[in-house]
Length: 508
Picture 1 (tube, one colour):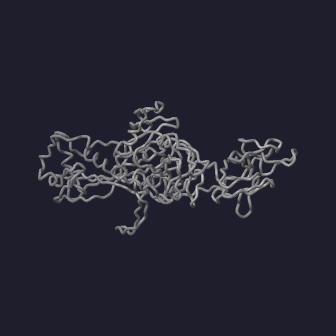
Picture 2: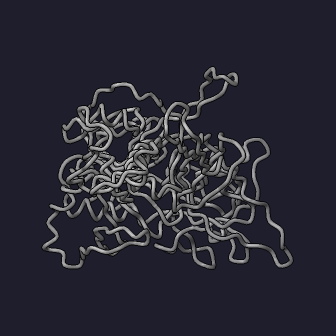
Picture 3: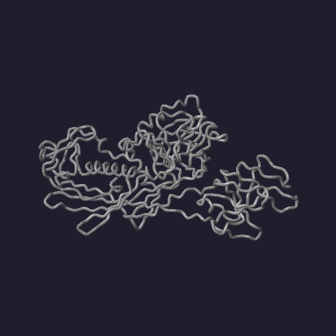
């Protein structure tokens, strides 16, 4: 276990100390003190050398259990990347986007070439020789005379404008004036039309095409240096006791505390870099950004869950542009209770089993037609005040463990004491990749600036006070939002109007 830890200096005084209560209210904690005879004697009411006999010790208190620190264990099993600086340019790359939405109407059935009006960020998706399907706009038959209802218009990108780099397109199955015309004209493509990117089409001798003009933008992620020291006296090493209260036992408890502290950091840490004065001059301290703030998709959901909402969550996870192979849902205690009380009795196709997952954890597995959801109680979320919330983590290929300094240990004798100090230090960070991760917020304060927030909507009328920028995932047809708003679609309230959501995830 000790090879998964870190280390830092600790106070070595052995003067009289006062104990503090632990989580059970007992005065068993001696914060910041070394496990020497003098310190332990003070903490136990003056029991001195030769009298350290423990009649009963709950071994569970000391047992190191990876289930108590799931996020730490996820980091340790993630892809390991050695970096050369504590400041890491982290690319949270998503799956390539395959669609965009027009921002203005184009085409009137008279021109063979038109310029598509798109958001600036979307224009690079439509490179020359790309074919594009236009949703909701019918194309024409091979003669270019009759509309073919349900067989949608397809475009071919011929180039881009010189200044704004807007894609120029022609219609593959447009309307023709004469049957012998090589190409037809482009019919009207309304604003808000969804364009689906298909494969490119090359001419007979062509082999080179321009690459997609998509330059990924990194986020700065800091590696945090963490550590702990273990000080145990030679006396403890030499004592023979009824139940061992030895170096191994003490180290195990210290390891558990260290990993629990680190686990909370991995969840909720805030990124920073600041200088401090040291004996060796000015040096920097780095703190890493927690997973809670790296997740790009936030789902607002308070209170009880219904079966329909649960299936909508499964659909949200396992459909889209970035579909995970496996997910673990780390949940607070109240969230787990809400999921457990869903009435699945009318849905025998939903299977609930207890199994051991790929990480070796015992999880509650709920099988749906969209995919399997693995649930695990995360005690850390309760301590952080997020007992009503949960995180959907793509642990199969959505995590990266950045290591700036490999774990290293040191051992030294403490001057003035018959004791040794052993130190362990690690310097690392956990980064999320892709947009399959979801934060399910049950505390009522989900929205985070710069992130995309979702809400499950099960009413035929539109929200009374829709939130600007929020995406509403429809569980029923909702003509109140739009006559074409159907079950399973996502609609976003933006600039005081409703638009169908195309799936773009904002980066922080």
